[in-house]
Image (cartoon, rainbow over all chains, first blue to last red; front, side):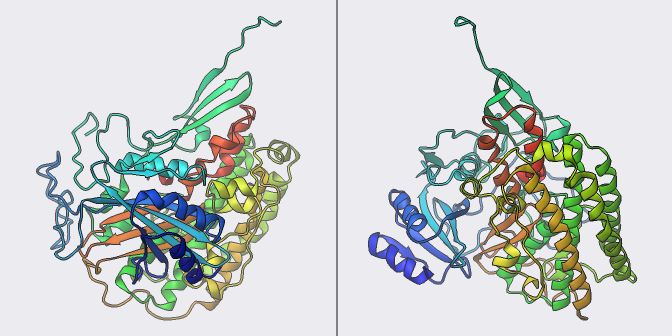
Length: 190
Length: 368
């Protein structure tokens, strides 16, 4: 199945599906869904009918944009080795004007079709307040830990996941570290 | 007999256990000797590098990538640089590309040697470890000559590599290759075809093609099950399309197959390194005009390479500032480790070490 034909077939069956052009990730197809409700259908069709059988990875991006963090390290030690012009490590970059920051978390699924040498990024946005997307664990068991990682680090709830609990961060960490507004609370190891 | 009370038992293996290769905890529920449920518990080495990257410049991020898979750090450097270069539209010189492939391949040899040695120890054969580390030491010496570091290199930089090869390096590398070719035969005699080793591994931990693909396994673990997927062939990067090598696959997907694929891969790596040394062109090793504080235009990039443990990918988002907006690493060890939940179930406790060792995980990469 050539990639273009795959996209045409997808568009035919699902409305609200948008092929992103130019592709955000150079050299790979990207489709954006209007909402999480169509996700299972689209992914299932890609897997069963269009040959995208391998789940490459799942990731998510918090699009809130840089937040002025007032973390626990208020006055970091001066660093004599820092090159000129580089900012202190605990201060995040200022927001770039014109960049589409928004109150959303985007979950990104990368699927591979090895026969056609094609990779497709399926992107779906969800709210930052109550991020929910359906779990893909019944399609690929490999989704298990990757979904748990996103749940742990970004707080996205994968509905239908049988074992959705923290995986990387310790139990006493509150919040989701990869969110842009995460503030670390000083613990006994700091 | 009917009123005999039976119960399951919970065994906590790790996080400080010599056979877990780092800080992995396995929560095993046993019924007698049989495993009913296996739960790998990770996160003991989580350093939050994906978050740290959001507060650091692109050149600083290369240093952090070394700390993921510290046993084979060159491919980690490479994959981040490839992704960053895609964002910055940099052209890499031919010599730098050859040097990158060269270093990645001798790093693969070092990594597989470490696997071979420690896997032998896991199973109860101590001697191969000493042999493997003798040769690994020579590879580390080569790295030390080229970049000053033995395990965490920071050698591959955005735009090329940090330094050209020092005088006498190629001769020393050829010397090593000639010496090493005969050694694989020695490992075969000592370990690969050792009857006790075969008994412990040949019929244990069988992973079918379907299970491996379902769990998203890559690298030698997937090839051990007979799927010839190798990023170097399917999606060639750097100069792999100009080099001649074979993709090694196993037959049944047993522990021994996963082990043997790695041994075969070492011979292929020797071939690749020899070709690189023969074809190595002259020229610069660093692209011109790489900024000290790069600010790539807003965009996204995905790059992946065949690291020693599988398909290592980097998804990078830039928003136009001097730090990545988001960095996601598709860490092969993390994805490969999850399969333990399935394959350990129903086996005996004594086989846990054989199977865990054969998946060849590095906890630095699992936890990131």
